[in-house]
Length: 316
Image 1 (cartoon, helix red, strand yellow):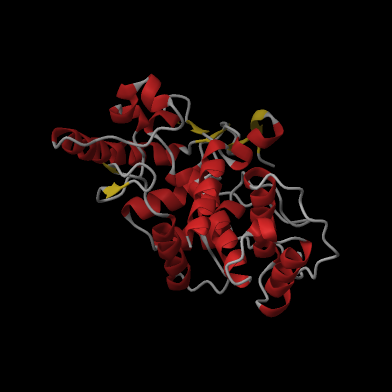
Image 2 (cartoon, rainbow, N blue to C red):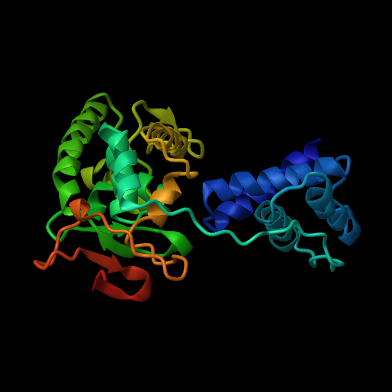
């Protein structure tokens, strides 16, 4: 049992050395552990292409996992052999891949979005409105920091977004006042934490060492912090993180059901329905919500298209 514990520790160190996300770390460790248990706790250095092939085929044929899930397992094993064991990746025969059907994203109409948002209140309404109005991904919304909200320019700086890239997006005018009122409450909560000897927030990489005051700085605090302090899984420090993704996912799904919408709606559906999201089916109309966007004087909302390098564009 001891060699396996040490192996997973080496995997964990290699993952953190490359600054992968905590979710990647948990997924890779889980799949490597399952690979070892599948072969009756044999050490991976003593296994080769046949064992890897058997495990991946088991996932596709017997476990009937999705193709994306099988790819995560494959990437975890590739990471293990390449960066931890430093062994050549076993040459594999053609694998029985799980079928990956091509699916179109679910898109809500303007009326459906309004019906969903009408079922939400408080912080949940504010977060869901940002998903739709600013075209944010779920984690981009939850990980927003106070310093990334530019109220003067009505812009949001998305840090470390998809592809580990920064980008700019529009802050809808009608969300400015609700966000400012929300931040007053968040700042009062932060001041209470500081008075009690806490108030630290996670800052990336070595920034906590090079700028030790940043952890308690107001600008670095999460826009949507948790209601209670918890111990941070990596450092063990008690601090206030951001709201859990499952919290918003649950309330949005319930809001879709209460709105009487038969479509399968999630947090990501709100982003798909946003004017920022341009990957629609051929011939589909761009969904706009005039109440969420400031106009250019002619009634046309102004939205951003940062993925194409444009600062602003006029919606058709």
